[in-house]
Length: 224
Ligand SMILES: *Cc1c(COP(=O)(O)O)cnc(C)c1O
Image (cartoon, rainbow, N blue to C red):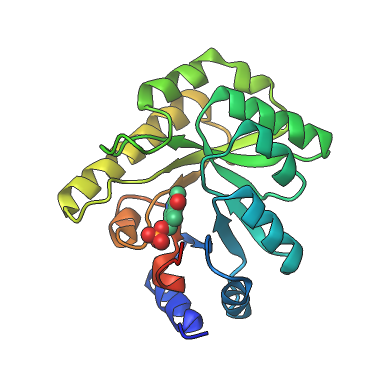
């Protein structure tokens, strides 16, 4: 391994305020990189492809909490339902219902986040704020006993402009408050704000992130 995963992981972890959890985004990195981070105590890892995740799940220690962070097709949910800790990228009621169905088949309750689309890039997935409001107002999610909505996830625009990043994170944080108050006021499980990646997590934690998803800074550049 020519990249010092352990040192970079420690540096990221040491830079996080108390109460902010680190999801180490290991997509496209080999299992021995994950093992190095695991040896440093890291237990939450994020992946974005179902097949790659399945291979790693089989090969790696079973006390790892795997988060799914990519676009998830409904026909792939059944493959990850037996073991996934959290699906961070729920962007439709259809997907939420499928996760619920597959979780029920496994006798599990799966934690999920609703993914917001706030960034200006047209290619990003996620619910617009209005689409998210409609999903929640519709109420069908209340009957889904095998999913637990734990909060919101978003990716900011891929820009260096600190003010724009701050605006987008703040918009997400304000929206979190709105949704919390309207739908989850007495639900302690609804508490996660997953934002911040390698290039912007320092700003994200200043904008009330509870969970950062950092890949490149820990594992080095991805080889696609
Ligand atoms: C790849 C990815 C990350 C990590 O990005 P880095 O820039 O490598 O830190 C975080 N979140 C999501 C949704 C991703 O797809």
